[in-house]
Image (cartoon, rainbow over all chains, first blue to last red; front, side):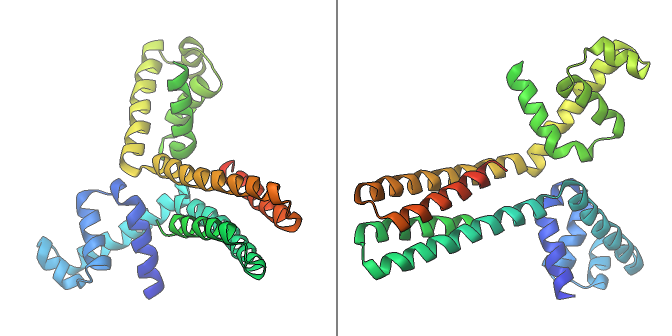
Length: 121
Length: 121
C-alpha cells in the first residue's frame, strides 16, 4: 500500500493537470490528504462506491499517462546518469585529498554541490 | 516559420501519444515529412480547408499540453544546469593542464564526456 501511495503521488505530481477537477480532488484527498473513502463521499455528497470507482478509474488513467508519455521514467534515467557522474566526482575528490591540492579541491567540492542540487530539484 | 516548425516538432516528440491517430498523422506529414496541405488532403480524402483546420487545432492542443505539463521547459532547465556544471569541469580541466596531473586529467576528461553524453541523449 505504501509503495502504491508513493507511486500515485508521484504520478499525480506530474500528470494532475490532465485530470478533471473532480478526478484531481479525489486523488489528492485520498492519497495526499489521507481522507477515507467515506469522508470523501460525504465531502462530494456521493456514495462511497462512486468514490471508489472514480478513484480506481483515475489511478488507471494516471498509469496510462505515464505509459504513453514516460516522463517519470525519463527523469529517473537521467538522474541515474547524473548520480553515476557524481560518484566519479567523489572518487576524484578522494584522490585529490591524498595530494591536498587545495584550489582544485574547492572547485570539485562546488561541482559536487551543484550536481547534488540538480538531483534534488 | 522555421522556428515554429522546430517548436511543433519538439512538442510532437513529447506529446504525440496524447493525440488521436489522425491528429498525429497530420502533424507528422506536414511538419516532419514536409507534405503540403493539398497532398495531405488527397491522402485523407478530405478538403484542404479541413486539413488546415485540423492542423491549427492540433498545434493549439500541443501548446496546451506543454502549458499544462511543462516537461520541455523542465528538461530545458535541467539541461541548462548541467551545461553550467560542464563549463566548470572544463575550467577545472584547464587548470589541471597547467600542472599536468595526468591521472586526474584522464578522469576529468571521462566525466566531461559523460556530461556531454547526458546533454545529448
